[in-house]
Image (cartoon, rainbow, N blue to C red; front, side):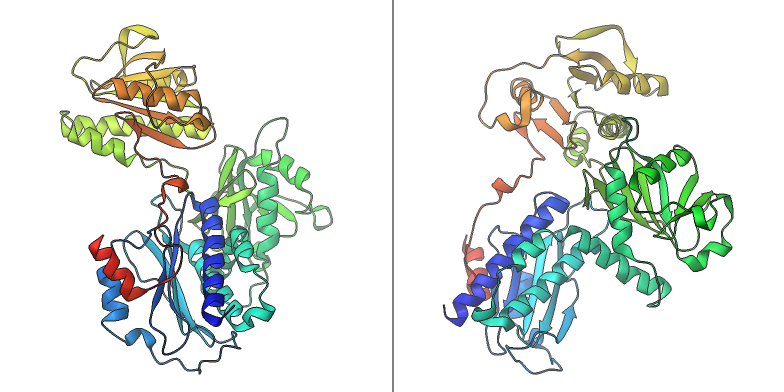
Length: 480
């Protein structure tokens, strides 16, 4: 294997591991890299799923028309060294997160992934891309004889480390380098507690972690004697104690080794908190949400469906703009309620002047959704098998509705009856939108027989399976 082939192998395996890990953390994701190994090498690109399509003019400006990217690196090129590395910050391109670096073994590299609209923070993802920079520099420096090929696997499983690395970076800025608080035990405890039910109930309440120096300044409404403070490693005990702060402004306090006691109201100046909300929760640094967690792993998602396509469809309809805005807020409230309670439901949004007939439980008088009691009742009715039928008059016209239709191309047997019934129904009825909320989180939007917000990995077309010269890629992109 020559040097060029070896470099390509490193690039491809690193990119694939990065893509797989980020897809688990943030949902289906693409990755790409622009790089030059040696000082006189031209810039190359590896973008197998077309992530960077549309940004050709910017890359031409940065890397082809100008030589500034080569910069003045304070250390000489040496393919056998990887310890020297200068980072290159996010390029701030629309829809992308990027992070790169210069090292002794790779003169320039910039990694990219998608900036999903529902991310709590891009911080952990930036740390992930930074790790890709380090891994590639390390692998290129090791050369073929010492190449282990583990970088891809390492990046695939990097989620907890990415969260930890971002927290450490932020803590160093906020409180300095001499902090004694350890992050890994905190993250491990949070995940274990999140998947530990108590009497079949999932954890609810807030657990905060503070520095020992903060404890004397805090006012506890209950504090355990030092000799009797429960160890954080005793997960089942901690899970039971969490019941004392359920559905309140009380918080369980830990110094990341033991549970100190319970406070009420405002948190101290610095804290890391885990806000448990049942089968999921959010990790925060002070008041900044870093990520969510569920099913024993960390995720980037805010867990709130954006429903952009629904909002656009309402605004483009014949509805009065004010009514369309009010209708959208009602729909979002119902969707978020179903997602929060983790029960599946289907919502038919009927934009016809006269609502169509749908077989199901009809109502003598449609329920006013603008009224609080009507909206709350509708949320409860969403738990009943079948679909809700919402009209453009902002009323509930029926529930437990059966959505039928004939087979259409594009059905996905893996998604179940609710998903495919909605596809069929929207294919046969005009001015109808159906939102399907699955019990395992995904929210799908169907219009005219298509799931318009489905972003599955299989839809990412494979454009170039090998690295290309950037100049060649720009030329091909212009003509395609």
